[in-house]
Image (tube, rainbow over all chains, first blue to last red; front, side, top):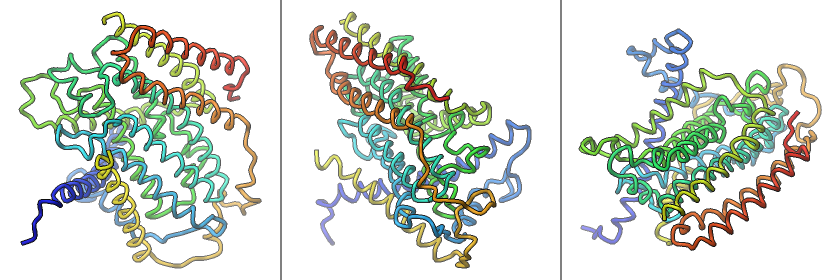
Length: 336
Length: 119
């Protein structure tokens, strides 16, 4: 019998990480199915119905297998090293955010004391991967898509970071667990409803700007298929393309989970007596609802133009978040 | 502090390993019938012309990147302030207001100069 004691922490963290990776894969499979179902029903059709019998539930598995047995094509003109490296960067950037998501008080990869800051930092890693993919493909569509994507993601990063500042100001900490703990005891304590209406404005700005961060409609210009074919992953096929896709769904989960954590009370139930239902269910439920709203918006709203996109970010979201920040500061200072 | 980041490092490593495994499986399972036409860059079926990486870009992208750096660094300064500002005296709040007014004046100047006109 080997003494396990000294390695216990290591084993727990490895098991947790493997669990998160499995969770992300399952979530992405489920989300691709849900996306097609939502799209179908919004457009008054059924979506996938054949594979697996019940409402086509095996469709994502069939898709995954199809992607796995496709030929691995690298264009002759591409920069081969960067072309291969880009999916790694995008996927790592997406999964890194999961390390600080608090599924429950004890169910968190690492409760960093700079949690919110860390998330903002690692989600920007995706921009580098996308620029790399666009450049390495040596294709005009990829290049345009990557440039647009980079401009859009860095612009919208500012409103995202500014709106996340407001819960940080109210909680006085950047640790995810402490921020959630400050919102305990019913939905009226959630940060989205405290210091009305400022935090509600911050939540709305965060939600819209995060749609642009993850390149989702109505801000999906980088992959606008009617003008750019597929944007930065035009040249990618098979499993390399699947990594970009997986990363997009991972990012959708991360941004929604951050919103659920800092604005919607994380793992706490809306009413204290409902706290008998385990925290992770509330947390994943809130996040899944926000993911559903993202899909709903994608199939409802038309795409913006590039100039409208930049206008909304720099001339509406940015001044509003600044004013918001000062007003919350004033509120807290005057209240003592 | 170092040990706090251990799970984060595990997360990054496992993401890399998962990607590598999936790539390896796909390369092992997939067909390998490369042709000259298949390896061309995609340009809607027309024969590709020129080198895509020689394309010139409007200066707007560059200006947006500069503005981003300014505002991002400003946010880097705001985060530590936001964590402790409850315990700071009124003077700290006033100085942040002045700091942000200067930046807003800069944004106003950029807008007036037409930096953010994407036409």
